[in-house]
Length: 136
Image (cartoon, rainbow, N blue to C red; front, side, top):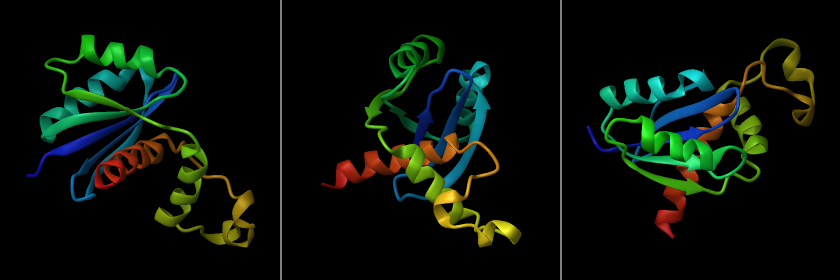
């Protein structure tokens, strides 16, 4: 399996996590409680050859970066990525990944709210931003 990147959208209460290959194949994505994030990352590192963690640079990012460095066994490299506007992008991406059903279809796009947290989709977008930056 090719090297993978773990995207991490840190938060106070919950965190988004995604694992993607260098070819942009998405292997998994999930939202976890902040208290369970380190354990979830360790578990994913056992499943996938994660060579890099890409973390959003807003809110609690500096504290989380330090926590990852100190709490993870053999922490991989960590790169911070601009996280601005990812929540808006993630909402649009959610509806691309999970097209609206039933009455949701009748609502204008801007009024649709995803029925679950989208922090994991933000983590996907962070990886994509990092990979796009590499391609420039």
